[in-house]
Picture 1 (tube, rainbow, N blue to C red):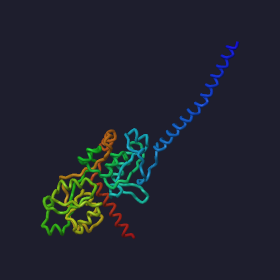
Picture 2: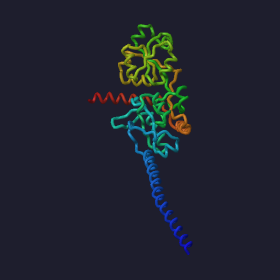
Picture 3: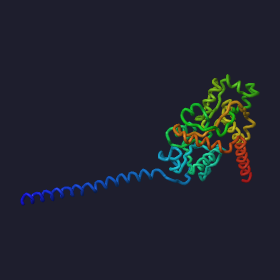
Picture 4: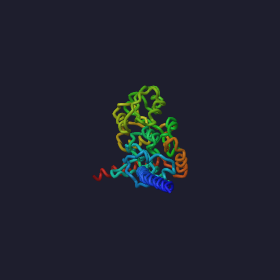
Length: 319
């Protein structure tokens, strides 16, 4: 009897210990699960499943871009990089933050075809900085008169060109007369050692050095600065795409008095959509979209310039 009683006491003691252990373990387990759930919820909140159109100046988190097509659709947002300074007819932002222009419309239409919103990131100063943003995974694509070059092809994926324009030089008329340059200055510039302005951070810098190895390259901050240098005879020429010159001449009619523009029909600048090197799927989609869409032409850009400046002139007269 004593043996049996001892056995019962021991069994009851073991059960008491087991209940105590379970009592301690269950709350601890629930605490761990609660912490893990809180962490997952916090991570999910950093990635918006669907967003409204956001202003172009808004910062884009690393969780937002980049991604393949399925990831972009799940995110609900396509992030397109555009330089912070406007380029008339291609990308402009009004006082209310609304974007317009051929490149803007192309980016919007690609996003719409994917069924997602579009966000424009405008933190970069130029296309060189946009290339770095693609490499760092900060944006999904670049749609900003992004020229096709061999160097860029090694760093990012480029679409088929959606617009091709001729390269050109703007020269100071007075300086040309003084030097006896009365025709296309291409041959003269190759051996002259003259100063040529070109906008820094663009593909035109390397091309200018290649075409005019003996000239002194003067890199400017923007198009307006380069044009002013030519106009006031601080440099002999300015090297750029023909459309930029057309825009500047429309803006400042006096340029037709002080300068001449010569277009190189055999030297083209081709604009492409750029995506990250690892994003072949998005590149293929953009190429297919471009092949199925109406082509942008130089005449389309000219019409935008004419409408803009004729409207601006009328507004000034009405004032």
